[in-house]
Length: 284
Image (cartoon, rainbow, N blue to C red; front, side, top):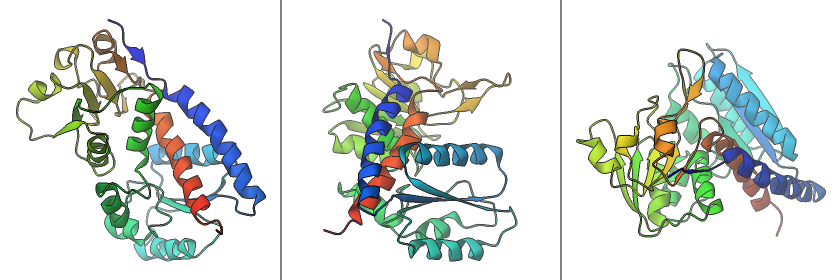
């Protein structure tokens, strides 16, 4: 068996073509979508992520503001800026790039963002709405995974889904979305006993651990759909996911590559959330 490759780059390009049309329609009505991205510090990975987000906005016609602060910036300075952006009618989405410096309380900063502009979907109000099955904004990575499932017509109803990782960014919202799609969901983590016993029964396996090539072929059920959310840099500089791609792709029915799988979809769904925020603000 050779797995179907779930190509996040191809799907992202298809969706972004539609997003460009939507952005143009909004702009023609005097409502150009706007996203503000706040970066604190000089973390190189964060700088790359922010640059990619800003460039993606420009490509589809979303106005983007990049606000950069030095590492020693006081938390209150960022909170004041968020308050200003909350009141700015030209900004429909606000994103604070994580991780923040150690002297910041990330929860306080994220909760300062208006729930109506929380395009990352991290505000407690939006998390609660997601759990209740009526989300305002879906966190971008799980949202992108669900789009990959839909595009490949992968049936989720009644399937056994296993998620490796319980983060607020991926694992927990992914579990909510899969449950809402009528899958039976197990969330595994560092304290899970006999992890492989869980993964070997998964029809849908989502790996979001941050451990290079952790998931081996021996841990995967024949014919499973394997979603690799991880992105890790090997000593030789190459990128890889949490899944040992080569051997697992010979056993799975479908799999996402790293790079080129979930990553492009994460930024794409940030654009989707920003557009949805702008569309909601249109006069009725």
